[in-house]
Amino acid sequence: MNLDELQKAWGKEGSDSEPLNLVLEKLKKAHQPLDRIRNNMQKELIYQSIAILIIGLCPIFYKFNQNFSIAYYCIYALLLVVSLYYFLRFYRFFKQIHNYSGSSKDNLYELYYEIRLNMEAYKSFSFLLVPFAIIAALLISFNRRLLKHPDKPLVEAGDWIMIPTVLVLMTIFIIWATNWWVEHYYGKHAKQIRNLLDELREPE
Amino acid sequence: MEANRGILIKVSRLYLDSREDQEDLIQEIVLRLWTNYQQFEGKSSFSTWMYRVAVNTAITFLRKEKRQPILVTETENLPELRVDDHASEQAQQMKIFYKAVQYLNSIEKALIFYFMEGLSHREIGSQLGITENNARVKLSRTKEKLQQIIKQLGYES
Image 1 (cartoon, rainbow over the protein chains, first blue to last red):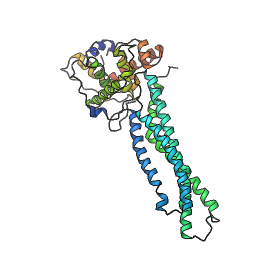
Image 2: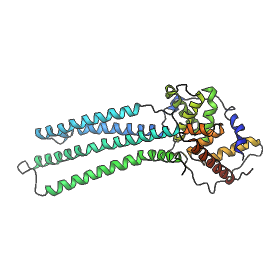
Image 3: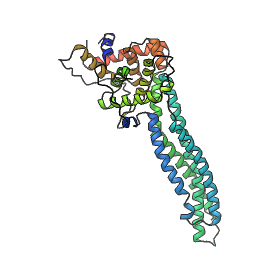
Image 4: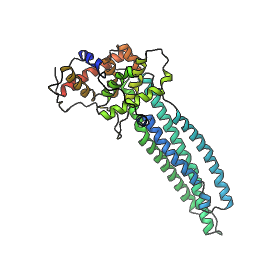
């Protein structure tokens, strides 16, 4: 087949088609990696916000004493402030309009950068929960002990091995789970764009 | 927009083979044209700007049902294409051409699209953000690959 000759037929392509039928409802569907990531992140952040609000009720559920409640809410206040910073950051990311009118290479680099940057921000936001979860877990378990045996010392002999071991395992699990989640659901889009960028490299 | 609708239709047919996906892509390109219109500074013609937005949107377009953009490199054992004997020679060729193009990756499709639109190597390079030489080499390889696919589809002429 001679592609040069086919160019004449190509020029006529589309001339026989019907006028464009644009449906606004269809335009809302996410067909771009960036939009899909935004949609998924938005949903997950809503669940995370609800979880953060529920976590704030822990002292009531577990009947914390006054000292434990003060300690818990001091840490909780810090969690709220940092979460607010991340939520504002992600809000800007959701509202940002991506520029598709640059060259394809620039466009792909910008997309890749946006996706990787927000993946890392999303990871760091999730890691932020680690120290808070550790302190909350300690306060909950100590509070239980205090309610069961108010006369016994709070820290027992076996705790010096048990607590650090549980904390280290918990931290490792949260980091692993976050990395897996973000790479599995968002990393595939970054990888696809990276492959496209490799296609545009100079020939060796 | 209506005057340049041929660009939208050609890009959508080149990038996707199902009618439904093609319609989705056209809607998506129109959305990007609307949201990016402020970026159009009038330095180039409207159609040149439209090429970029359309091709950039198509390159990263994700189909429904979690189907990803086609990134086919293996072209062996392609199914033989049945061509309607009553269709005109040109129409038959276009049909085979569209079928064969589906086996190219997104960047190769962009190269073929700009070539078919009659852009020079320098212009193709500028649209894709690569050097003129790179555009020449890649286009030449893509045309060769396309010819091989056409042969494997059972059409030799």
